[in-house]
Length: 80
Image (cartoon, rainbow, N blue to C red):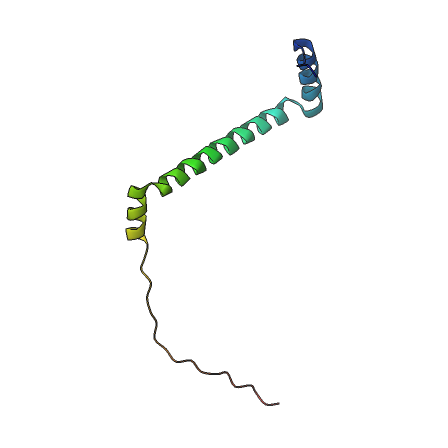
């Protein structure tokens, strides 16, 4: 299977524009761009979290656990 020629690509592009319209294609393009940007941002944040310097800082920022004292009582069923 060979690569499509330039004329075939242009014909496909014209058909897509006629079916979807330019406004819809513009919206899909901007949505796709935002999705790629969000994906890259998420990947960068993940890399920063794995950095040992940032890991120590995150551990300091997290609140510590606490113990709550109390008694355990059984719930009594109501008689009808």
